[in-house]
Length: 100
Image (cartoon, rainbow, N blue to C red; front, top):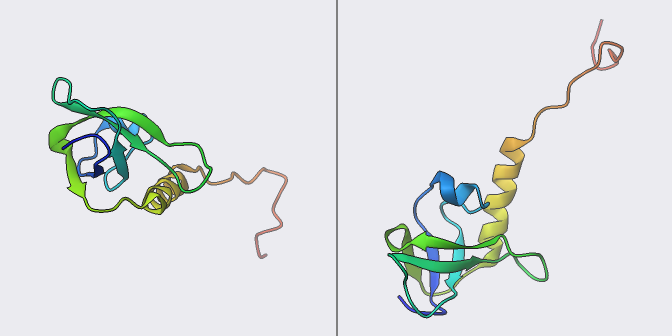
């Protein structure tokens, strides 16, 4: 691999998830050299949105892909954000959604 190669993350690890990066997300190698078996990878979002992260990823956790699609990252992020939302609690006073 080399700088500006498009890559996909093929492993789900807590250290990546903590930074908002998950298996299946796509990015670009952002430095010329691999350091200690890791590449600095930029994981962007589509358009003018803020990047998800630029973090060091173990080389064995990446595969090279021909073209990167930042929309894939947004879909994965959206799915995980939906899973992490807590359902709204119904207060003791709000019984309007119940049929009697």
